[in-house]
Amino acid sequence: MTALQPRRAPSSDARRWWALLAIAASVLVVGLDLTILNLALPVLSAQLHASTTDLQWFSASYSLVLAAALLPAGLLGDRLGRRKMLLIALVVFGASSAACAFAGSPAELIAARAVLGLGAAVIFPMSIAVLPVLFTPDEQPRAIAAVMGATFIAYPVGPLLGGWLLDNFWWGSVFLINVPVVAVALVAVALLMPESHGARSRRIDIPGIILSSLGLAGLTYGCIKAGANGWGDPAALATILAGAAVLAVFVAWERRAGRHGTALVQLELFRSASFTWGTILTTFVSFAMFGILFAMPQYFQGVRGLDSLATGLRMLPMIGGMVIGMVGGTRLQTPRKGPDGSPAGAPPVGPKILVAAGFVVMAAGLAVGATTSAASGTAFTATWYAVAGLGLGLAMPAAMNAALGALSAERSGSGSALITAMRQVGATIGVAVLGTVLLSAYRSQLDLGGLPAAAAGAVRTGVIAGVGVALHLHSAALLDSVRAAFAHGLDVMLAVCAGIAGLSALLALAFLPRRAGAGARPADGAGARPAGGPDVAAVTGSGAPLAPPSPGGQDQGHEHARR
Image 1 (cartoon, rainbow, N blue to C red):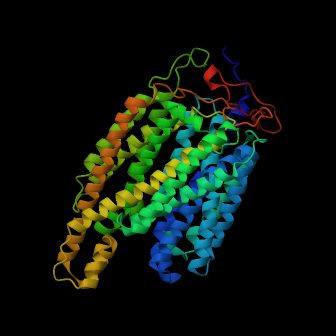
Image 2: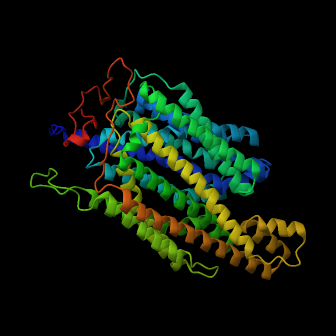
Image 3: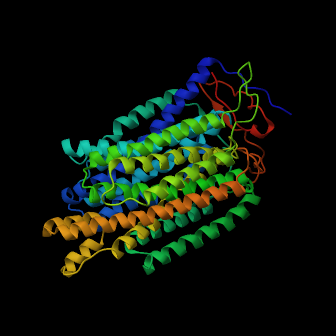
């Protein structure tokens, strides 16, 4: 039976979209921090007398806490309230950003970065979790595009802003800049976002929290070590295997806990083809794109000799292509309207075709990028970068919408945390694997004949060090060799990324349902509720009652705030 159409006043509709801006601001501040840190590492090394190990832990401490806390954060959002958890996380993120800015030693900065990761672990899933609550399935593509856009806009803005700050202020300013952005997000979330929660009476799965945290942290740390020391490093491989083994135990425990209604993760979600393949394909996007975002700044700075500001500017074409793809993809996912403005038919293009098309476009851009040389001009790199961004803009929101379509409003926090955890691990593995591919290909093309052992060892560590050695020795031949070798390594890595995108297109065509949310959506209480009875998911804005569910039987469970 068709559910009643929710009745909203215009001000309520406007408030929901203003709330979306608050969510986007929350995600943006996290993305800025990630990109600015990479830019500040050389300065931090000099100012804090940080060793190479310290520099690795500046990033690793953040990533490990983020991975470990993601799934518990989703559960707490469902249980305590997603708006409340987002506000707490923003306060934690702002305070730890200030602590990073005024750190007096590497140990203090590592500790502050770990707390920063804790805040990010809540911000990411909560920002996604509120989308199925605030917006109907017809509106979700636009909402997802806005949040994903805020995430990726941080990549060019971070280097631009960070370069300007480092050129004009002390190094702590790159962390302190988060504070005013957090303050704006706090006010916006407090005033505009309605509270929502899930089954608050559900017991907390303590063993599941411990197992998931240890497993995700182990897998992430192992990949970080493998990226730094190579995949032949026994410690890295042992950590990866241990993390994977713990996650296998976690899955077995969750199956048992699910039968008693106390599971941390609703494994029944994987019965939905939309959720399973939407999540897998967004992970593949993260795998490929984070490798590119890791490698291209090194190309622009090491091979092309550009500074941080110029590097940020040359990343803008990808963002431009992404925005065009997101806008176009959103329109293609919007149902046709009848004369009265109500939905009158299916969207022009379903997620299967849109995701597959996005991956095909991305693969084409990356394949062209795999012909980049040390002499390639700005127009060439801008063109293929924009095409890859266009494909990303088409594929990522559509795949994410397919995954979110399987989530009920009650379990959107834990479900979104699961999606985010898989994306985070995919990004970490992507940087490690693709970084190894790039470095191996780079080393295979170096001409180090006649160099002292110490100098040759430094050149083999990467393009930035190689360029530094060549300039120190005033060797034009070595400089050309280093730059040509890195361009070759980049080409090999981009070819691998193109292959991943092509494979993803085939997987989308083979397994992704034709419409978002198709497949089994678990009922709110499936494996999630104690025997005591249902705990109705609530969404309140200004103390107002819930609107009825959105139209279409498959969308019951999506609830909306209204005044």
